[in-house]
Image (cartoon, rainbow, N blue to C red):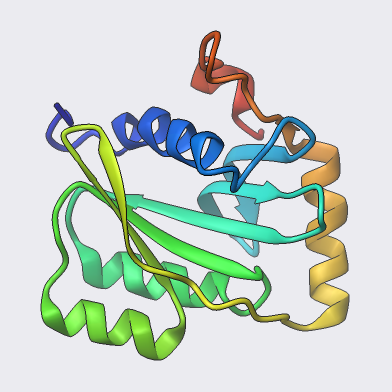
Length: 156
């Protein structure tokens, strides 16, 4: 069960889902609380194919999550809201218009509610983001053995 008010509790089921569905693999770079443009992206990844993914973890306050995920779409190839509560119809429509994906983690079983369309942002900003993720990101944890503690993934 997802602990109320604990956004970090969404991370382990998300990472497991990403691995099981082969969205992230062993050669990707992953960062939690990734500093970017004066704020922090809850989780950011650089895939082996060069795709940039952003994940905003929210228990509630989907409007704020939508703002953050939309901002991430300016540079990241895909951006997702990860939540334990189904967003309202208004948020679902806004996510579709902004090409933001939504992943619902209900009782630890994630479901892709809507997909984030692939987009490419500003080339110079994107290259800076790739360099930063390569430098600050860690390896994707092997979810078949154990998930790394958040402290091992955190960017400072």
